[in-house]
Image 1 (cartoon, helix red, strand yellow):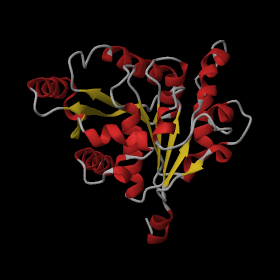
Image 2 (cartoon, helix red, strand yellow):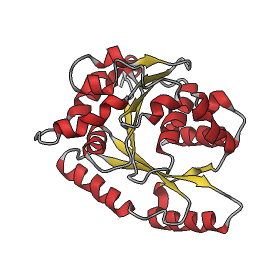
Image 3 (cartoon, helix red, strand yellow):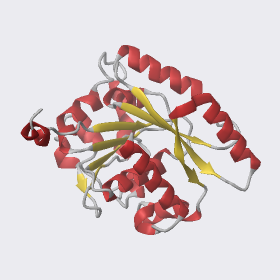
Image 4 (cartoon, helix red, strand yellow):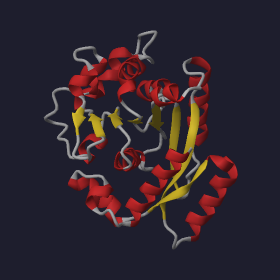
Length: 263
């Protein structure tokens, strides 16, 4: 291959769905802070919030009550995605927000044959503008999550290092397998992320050992700790890197981003 051809080649956009039907495992925290970490590494990043609760949107300081152009309007075909994508104070980070309007989406498309393709059709139109697209999915295995898995190239699964951590996980794995077989044959598990780790307890270590035994090499070396600053950051509408960059939570997400960049 000539040097001229090498310089014109562009790395394909990584489209990562963050999924786990259990609530409170760190999906939104991961979407926000992984996206910010990759943007700090000067990668062009888009975070898409497809959770009707819009926690990623508010966690980035965007008022979901005042949004007119959101992912719901885009999926309905009322506006192009570019019209809803917002700039952020990190130069390389953009956001496609959600709002409370999005709660109507699943009911409206439930009877349609190709209701799994809404998000993929949107992502396919804009993916060439970004190096990473991170999709924050809701805590369910419904139509919205199927849309996220159909649009994505891979799935990142946050698992909290607490009792019942693996409960229900087989349902998520089954959903990923069914999505691969039916809608998205190239979908893969990007990795398992251990979250809410408390190094002071034996339980966290026991759960870590169990998850690493179960998933083997798919588990990231980076571990997200229980961290006060990490919990506080969303209330200030900022990723941890803009709120407390020296905190353990910030360092953990920067380490995760480095692992993903090296994958």
